[in-house]
Image 1 (cartoon, rainbow, N blue to C red):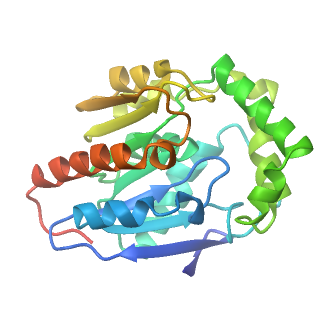
Image 2: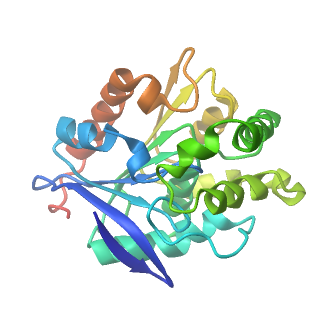
Length: 263
């Protein structure tokens, strides 16, 4: 693990594997309560299966990165996609990443590919959000109860330096009235790289309509993989299937792009 300064904040970064020549670097973007560590062994396994390099990092407010010092804005995912992520990629000399995003991280990956005007080799998206559903709000309200009355705070405290700032920074903005109209559907037409969406049918934070709208909105080819009975964490709940699907996608995308070797 190392630290990289992005803007005014210090971020936790894990370089997990170097790339073989000609292969993209996988950049892992975690969920709304995640961190670099909370990906568990999935980044290392995917790097091993594909030969790609891998980088996982904790966004500002998460993991061992600097904790939140201010409330989040409705456009926090746009800000991450358009400002923080490009700065981080430049500092790591990653010029054409293959972004692997989960939940909020998948939404950030979509926004980065759509709006940053920077090369992106592909998007592997696990349980992305592109609009707010009733199920999303119900799941986030349930998470709040689990944090206040259950053991969620204790579990998050193992992975975040300031679990209260991490949890409420995410939970408060999602439950705010102004967030109900949040949507990134109008940006999807700017995505011009190959895309994979993996969605569980039992995800408490979103229905299959999220994945369908991604597939309908992006301009390049989009593969949709649904996993029956799987919840919000396909890479942890169904690791073998998720690894097989994502590694096959990565291999196909890498083989289809004979450009100069990437970092």
